[in-house]
Length: 537
Image (cartoon, rainbow, N blue to C red; front, side):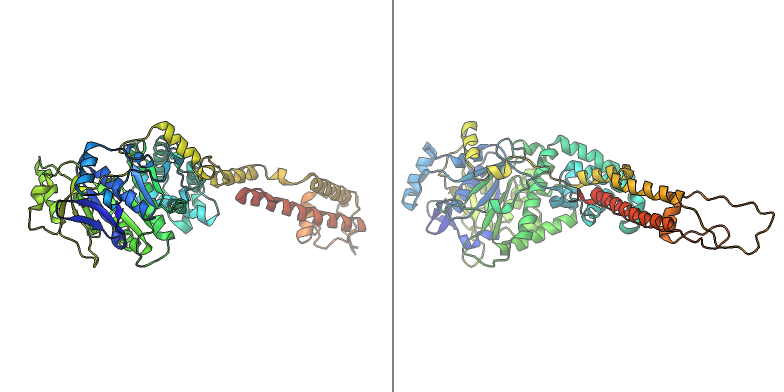
């Protein structure tokens, strides 16, 4: 709840815990076992950011976050906490929030699409679980495409490019390195699996413009962008890679802004462990660097997972604002997770943190935020402030109505298949297969006329002083297309080594042949260019 120019996270009998907006981009963590109240905390924070005019992105793994779009309703527990902590006096009221629904499959929100060129070979290798050698081949494919202006938009583009590079590897290996056909075939098989997971819908155009996430409504409230992830959660590689693509794209595209009174954008990573599962050290280092530097661009990142142990230590150390819901300590592994969670807090002398973590009720949490000087505060046990919007999911009719009312629907709803690598390479193949047909009929007539004129013209040989008597009289040589082209390119000589004297008819024939050769050259060049870059005007 946004009150007193601060975000109220939770209360107890003696304390109210506020998150200072200017420190909200120091990132945060929401942790706890399933069913302990993480979603309530997520919604409360998202509402508060929206109230202060900060756009938000979050993923809806179960469908219940969609209730942000519907006005809240009173329950006995909410009523009790509102009265106990005098929340109405601080501005608490049931209300709805501006939301934009998104869906990678285009079923429960505006379609989210990304081109493979934007995704790049590194993130794509993560989706496909490629080995280092296979990733090397994929890098070559993308490099060849870039250097030859062959956009890789969708999966058919990529498959076509892989086949093209393998079939022409003799042409490319000297510049790009060895291209293993076995690795290429493995990539192609992996793409079939990606297609089965919905890749044909995801990798397409129009591609998502992340600026459309960073908007406010007519009342100045930040838009809450909700990615429906119920179906997407069945494809964790696509889900995690899409979020990583968003993170890296935000980092690369947003300008430096330094310290601000509030964030420009807040990004919640639900099921954060999926981001880091099986991540290579090199990739993890890049993510750690982005997390460290992106706050200077006004972006706050909040990771949501069951345990702090799900987050790499280098990233966990950068999460200054923390909310820990209950963790159960039934097994030695659970007990270790509780200990790790307790050690991430600044101790409170009034209780043992590890003991309280196992005793928290639903909707309760241990909270520690950065104070105005950026120092972690002493951990407090609080009741999380209830959300002001509806707790639960909205029905399909309401969702559909909101999608139809979206000002972005006309931009994203219909897919577009532009000319890209698949079409350009297909045109090139057609052009190569039909090279002779590229010569226009007028050119053929000129060539035929030149040949006819040349054959009818008499050949005048230079005088020979003493021709040997035994030498047979020379016949008039046949004059064909090869002779015409040879003459144009440098002239032909008779067998005796002396240049023949050209008649006027021959000179006319050579001029016509030169014109014909130039026309042929232009038409062949056009054919090649059409094959490489599309139809020329």
